[in-house]
Length: 188
Image 1 (tube, one colour):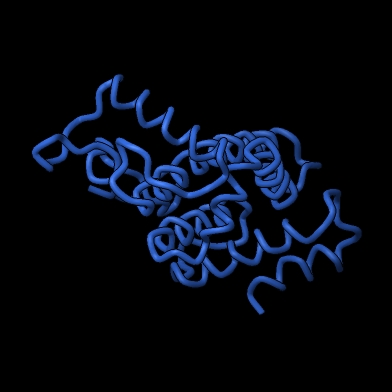
Image 2 (image 1 turned 90 degrees about the horizontal axis):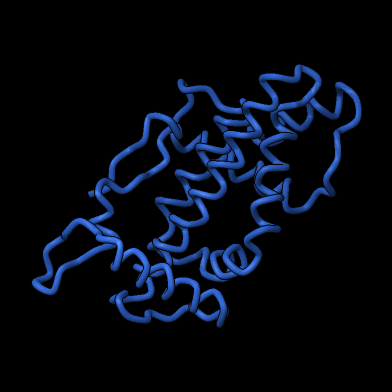
């Protein structure tokens, strides 16, 4: 079963990890044990080492692997984003947008093989919902989207934030006009 997380502003999370990650021999969902966890972790590591999307056992298809890979990415990204939010709250001189963008860049650099594989298969239907949820989370964390905004608007702002993050060199923006343009650009 997939549920919505209150903490990550509509980002999908798995409940019990049963619907997406663990299936018993009878085909019914089960709670994942440590043995299953390690078998799945090792299989995902092997996929990343090869750099090719395959469905090694215990996975049943490549969509299931993509969802598990995105789940791994989401955990790492959410951790860095939360640290960025805390740092920005503690330091008024730190721009929240810059902090969230830096968190995304740091995660992408630390998880290069994972990010490359997800980017290669970004157009797959299996990833649509989780990518939109990630975009909404990033927009909200950066303070660029309000809860009153529609999910589609929040996702569009988050997608623009990621696109800008991928194309711009790291570093602070210059002046209030550039800051205003940056905040307006995703909504244009």
